[in-house]
Image 1 (cartoon, rainbow, N blue to C red):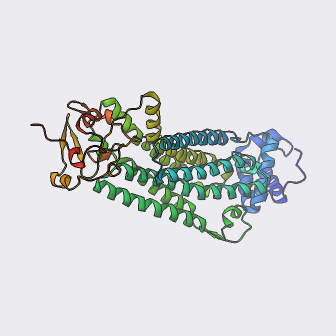
Image 2: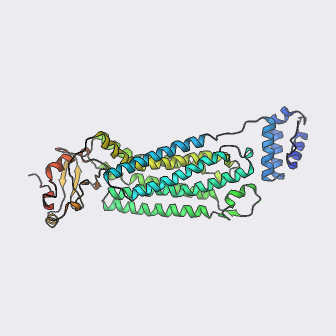
Image 3: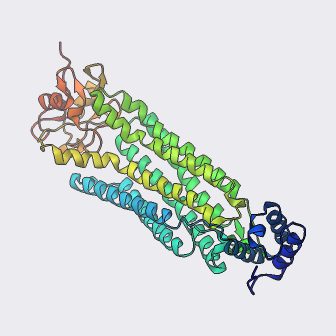
Length: 432
C-alpha cells in the first residue's frame, strides 16, 4: 500500500497500530479497507491523537485509497433555490400588479416586497454556497472553503429570521385591511406584536450567540478561542415559535370566512387561499426535524443541505401564500368583464349573511346623522359582510349569495350612486 507523503504522522501511527492488531498485511489494501474492526480502531485512534484538520486529511486519504464513494449533493440545493425564488418573484409581481390596477397598494404589499428582497439575497448566497462545497462531505472540502461555507450559512440564518418574520407581518397587515371585526383585529394585533418581537429577538440572539461572532464559523477546527450558546436550543426555540405563529395566522380568518354564504366551490377556493398556510406549517415542522442535532453534526457541509432546502421552501411557499388573494383577484379581472356596480359599507352599514338572507343591521338614527357623507367616505369597492370587507383583492360581491341572487345584484338594486343620493338612502328598508 502506497502511503501519500502528506499524510499526517499521527494518522500513520494509528494505521500501523491498527494493522498490527489485525490479520491483514500492511500491503494488502483490499484487506485493510474491508476490515471493519481495523478501520474502527484506526478511526478512534485518529480522533484521539490528531487535530480536527489532521483527522479530516486522514479521512480524505482513506476514502481516496480505498475508493470509497463520497457524497455530492451540490446540484440539489441550487435547483431548489432557483425554482423557489422564481416562484416567489412571479407571485409578488402578480400581487403588486393586481394592487396597482386597483390602486390599493398598502403596507402589506411593501412588507412582502421587502421580504422578497431578503429572499433574493438568501438565494444569491445559496448559489455561492455551491462553489464553497455545500453538499459535499466535509473531509473532501478545502479548509478555507469550510470556513466560508459556515460563514455564509450564518448570514443566511440571519436573513432567514428577518425574511420569514416579514412574510408573517405582511399576512397580518392584510388581515387588518380585510377584517373590521374588533375581536379579530385584537387577535391580529397581538399576533403581529408577537411576530415582531420573535423576528427581532431571533435575529439578535443568533447574531450574538457566539463570542466573538466569528467563532461561529471558526470553531469547527478547534484551534480558535471563543464560546457559543447551544445552537440546537436556539433553533428549537425559534422553530417552535415559528410553528405556533403559522398555526395562529392560518386560524385567525377561518371563523369569519366560514360564515360567508357562498357556493361551495368558491368558498373552498377562499379557504384554500388561507389554508395553504398549513403547507407552510408542515414545512416548518420538517425544518425543525432536520435542525434537531444539526449543531452537533460532524459533517456540516453535507448535513446543511436538507436544512437549507426546507428553509428555502418555507419562505418561498410563505410568500406564495401571502400573494394568493391578490393573484386570485388579478385572475378574475382577466377572465371576467368589468362592471359599473357600486357597493358600499362601513361600520354603520353591516350586512350579515345567514342562510340565504341578508338582514339589515344599520342603525337608523345614525343613518339620519350621516345624510351628508360624501362619496369619498363610502368607498365604491368595499362592503362589509359578517365582519369581512369584500374588497376587490379578496372576495367579489357576486360570489356571496342572497335570497334574490348575488349580494352584488342586491346592492345594485338597493343603492344608487351616492353622488346623487344622500347617505340616508343607502340603508335598505326591511321588506314587509
